[in-house]
Length: 367
Image 1 (cartoon, rainbow, N blue to C red):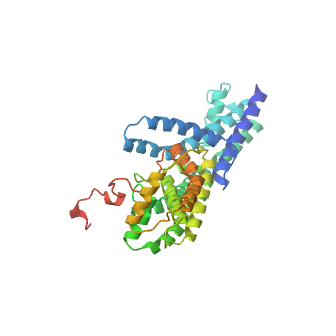
Image 2 (cartoon, rainbow, N blue to C red):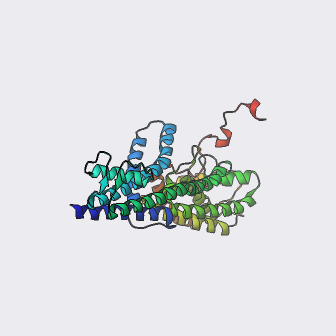
Image 3 (cartoon, helix red, strand yellow):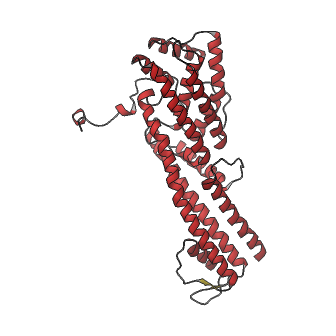
């Protein structure tokens, strides 16, 4: 039993430390499915999502889902710490539990666990202390690991929140361009109505960089994908879908609108959708079809009412259909997996933008 405890303790410590290294330090995704962090996130998210599905109110459900991201990070830290404390306690027990207690009784595994916990969190209470070279060496080793682990976790959280903040800044700006929730046709309609179609190219360029940063940050730290936006009817999935939709419309052909920047934005946005689907192990919905033939005719009619001239030909239809097939299965899968609704192609009903939904009275507008 002592030998088994030794092997299990070493294995547990190695698994936790390697998992923390891959999650926090290693700046790239890990394709291996059997990982402690992946098992933890998948198990807790499925449970959290099941509970959220039972909440009838959309606002209440969204508030509940918004808690998962921060709570999951704290929970993951607890899982790592518990694994290391238990692993070192097993090593102490396998070495013979050479500990001196206050009562003078022979140390049991509970004393080993207590000693491991106080050492790992650098409490140094002194009511239980090691005797013998092996017990002392394990105590010193664990205190070093505990100090480094706490420093790593403290440094980890600000990095995640900085990446989250960078993602949300541009996502919030999308409200005035595309509405809430965003819609590809709304972007084109608003620009055409204002006579500012020339602003579409720099707009798509800015979002090209946003997609690139989204891909990099969410591959390095997949946990950020579960952090939800601070405003209702917004999400990074809906923003990504909108960029793909508007780029696909421009590439398929709109008279007088250049296509080169749309090609570039579409390429990185699709790359982001495909890679994050794989990283998050979201299902791929190959049957996804968000734009039927009748919907396409209505979409073109809305664009024409705004003064635009979208291409109407079999070639344009085939081109748009090909583009949609290359990203819609992944976008729809991400939306369902994360419970983030995929936006429509055009604005539905008379929903106000988030910036128009302020509770302030007209008399307060000068403040």
